[in-house]
Image (cartoon, rainbow, N blue to C red; front, side, top):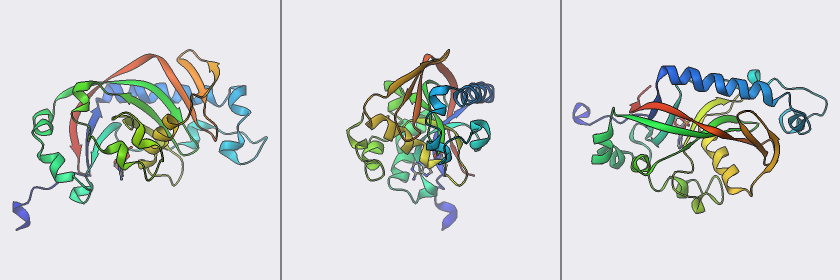
Length: 218
Ligand code: ACK
């Protein structure tokens, strides 16, 4: 009967400690606040507004969504491919509720999403489903050729009517493109433009984020 079946979560992931959520949230807001004042950004404003001369307030443009985390496996309560295999994996079980320090190495912005890129260590990659990037190929051509773990990110905000699943796809898309044009050296790092409203700031000093590996049921 249903009571004997183990219930699977919406997703597994690393959840940022609340003090770290505040820090990352503030860094992201400061970045957005500065970005929309840069001449280099204004030059490409139509990517966001569809109209020249119009201004955009990026802090208002994006809505924040729930608790900051880095999804490892989207299970959709068991409906997603490989969900139960992932949950049963001894490495996953053993790591459940352990603390991990994630390294956030870049911030990226598109007309759809804003997020932080996560650079996973070999130990952290053991919790990362090996086929994630291959399975993203249908949505983002070229993903399958990227290193395993390339999709790892923290969603920081989404534009109106955009779902958070888009953030990882936006990151993969940027990573399949040739190096962007460096538009500005900012205090936080160098800012590159990848066309079509895609921006990436490589952090001079990666943000070290304390997290707990767990799952979200909703
Ligand atoms: O920002 P995210 O990584 O993108 O965190 C949320 C979380 O699961 C709850 O919605 C992510 N998510 C949603 N759908 C998918 C999917 N099909 N594949 C991978 N991640 C997904 C979403």
